[in-house]
Image (cartoon, rainbow, N blue to C red; front, top):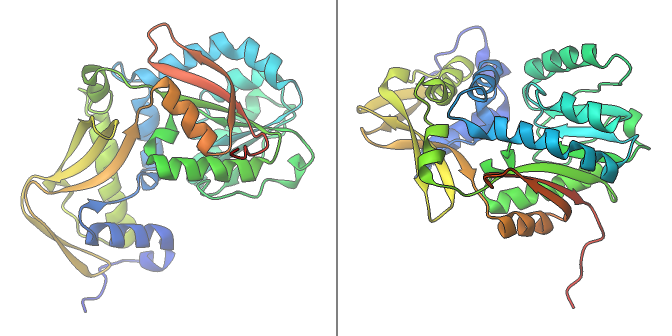
Length: 325
């Protein structure tokens, strides 16, 4: 077996879950690597740049929706809750919610530790009297929350339609994990992108400036850096397609020529035209979003949408699980 071409002991420091997902994802057919591995520091920065692009409607639509709905959200959730944000990123939307509902604490959870700590410190300067308690974790599983919020009512915050990155099966599992993390009686404010014309959807994931392409290709850069891989990044191009049957945008990395490379010394071969599937972004209809939440153990109690009906913001509650008659 070939020895890994790795300098300075990088292989021993690599996240074992990242290693397993990359090696397993490249070996299977069709090839696929989970989208959560986009978010190293560079990937997180690129995603924040994506949210400012003219083609990328979700962020500006959700921000406007949050601003208009916030007074009613505040009435429904009340004061003194601990806000738990899943996948907080730069927490760009969070100040709007925090100013609106007067929480007792804020707990951002994110898998990218460096980015999490930097964004948490920046947010804390704007809210000097609010305890900000960052947690570095994979929120796809139940996450132990800081002891400081143990006795407080909870409000989960999951904006950006990140739920759409998971298959419906995985999304329901995630919602159940959130319910376990937050506890009975908690509330969840979640953004969910809706089905719309492919002419709007595809450019949002394949922008003219190429920022989304750089975001997608950065995954290969990360594999090279952290796993000592020899992937020729210039041999791949970004592709975004609308899969109508699955109601989702798919992102792929397509080989533009035949390539061979190694990851930790293990050989791989990809022919021209073959792809690595890197992300899904599922879009839901009005009823579909509500059914998904119920499948995850959450009962919708209020919903808001923009004038075009492109995006929805749903407030749900962790009520007792409904037993079938």
